[in-house]
Length: 366
Ligand code: F6P
Image (cartoon, rainbow, N blue to C red; front, side, top):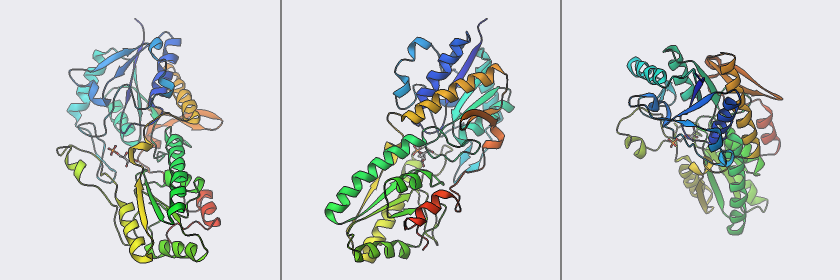
């Protein structure tokens, strides 16, 4: 019988998911294997199983299509992370049911395309008897074991473009513009796009901010004849004496299902304080899910394609429990167990932070 492998996408969607699916399906077909797409994330393995065979001839156009044709989920019975990142063990009865679904589909192995949460679930599935290989996905770029996750480059490109647009309106109106970006508890998107977009202030989760330092920067620019300021705020940024800012509403709307806390709203607080303390007219822009949609960049398409091929190779070599990884110039692999559970944050003594400081960009601490 033809070898059959499964693939699912888990967690938040991300540019490049479809490019990975395409690559896995084509690379598997080259080996004479069939690929089955599990629909709606891990839940698709539960009864009644939701899955469909993916044919190589149906993969046209997926390289540049945003979202995931398989669907995904970041809450519910298959949530391995809750609150501010606490790990949760999936109910063994649910894992056992997933194994039944896997066997029913007559799969050899499962490719899990996901972030830290989905890869954590993947390992729990493997412990329940499902051979798993992982592909690291997230715009947040906060997974260890790879120099970059796919989706990050696209999110940064979009955010940088947004900053260019915000600068021109800030200059025209002599305003302060505060732009909030995703990234959860890591400031990678904010720092990369903030430097590339010429921001004056970048507030990161890694550096609790003092609003007085931010206002001092705005005032200094004013004194130097620069009447506009561009301020990037990561959604996970928090004041020195404050906590993460979260949005309650939609989290409640999950009906009590397990999920991670929803960050959001810090830009509003920062903008209100700047306006009150400096007298400068201030506006906010929250990029939100725009960062997750759309066409992946060339860089992301390329690593997605390489990751998909590497995932199929790992299955051919029966090297399960591994995650594909980019270590330029090569794609290689690491143990999923070594990549997950350690939030990869921006190093404070790294070159990016040094670069920002050398340019006089305020990081909120001085
Ligand atoms: O992890 C990706 C991400 O987009 C984070 O940057 C953000 O905090 C979160 O997902 C948003 O999740 P949701 O789509 O459930 O609101």
